[in-house]
Image (cartoon, rainbow, N blue to C red; front, top):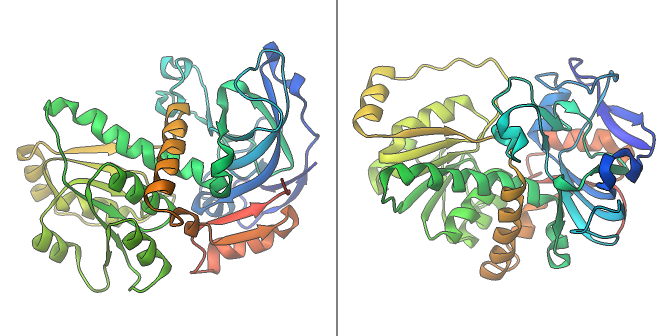
Length: 367
């Protein structure tokens, strides 16, 4: 069985590997679900793993199969599985449990352990192969009516979690009714965060470097948000013009923007960092001013990584509502299909060198 893999720690090592085809019986207790992979989304995480910035292979292997954004069709299920059946479209969560109490109650995205297990990222093979098998606990059924959005469920789950966690933690204020949100970055997470916030009625400003018109600006505007090019308007100018944000979601992949966003947050606001930065960049921040403003303003910084089953189900609901509210808009994020596992070099080229590639995905099989 073919798979696209890297040798973690070795830059530019992406290659075609071989794995045995899994079986339903590989999962104990009759809880196995065998999935034929149809499409797999790839993003900056896969690019950075190939650049040897992070990632580790599963025990017993010297390679790691990439791909954490899955879409496939169920081929077989174990006798204890009842929420999916052969022929169903499914996706799968990414993180798998460790030993902490959070792992054991179904919130492995909140693990308190230093070592974490993520399919296609760390210590577990990903989905960029022909078949995979997993425990039914981690398999999420997708409506047939959303099959055209396929690999967007996983990134949507990250956006949905970021927004949900902001509201959850702001219960500390007893009454929190945010009006204005900034979304830093207009990649897939930024655009899907824009969608999630607009569905909740917020006034949203989505910031990115590129000048409009562009596909990104068109999608943002079609979602009823406002696209702001940082080439034309600085962060300080935007804040002075429209006011500081009640909620900021950083999805840039830039630690400089992540820290810079701290100065744009209003009183009682929350800043959510979703970016994973694997580099070694150092930035200067006006730390005394930030410290003073944040203490006096009761501001909160929240890190949000990955998502559990609850957030995947939220994502599917948001995508469904988004299709009704903004018909035809979300699908425009899916810009760059790569046809076949053997085209892994084209896949990496699109991730690294194609400025028009908003969402790259590999079409593994028809179905």
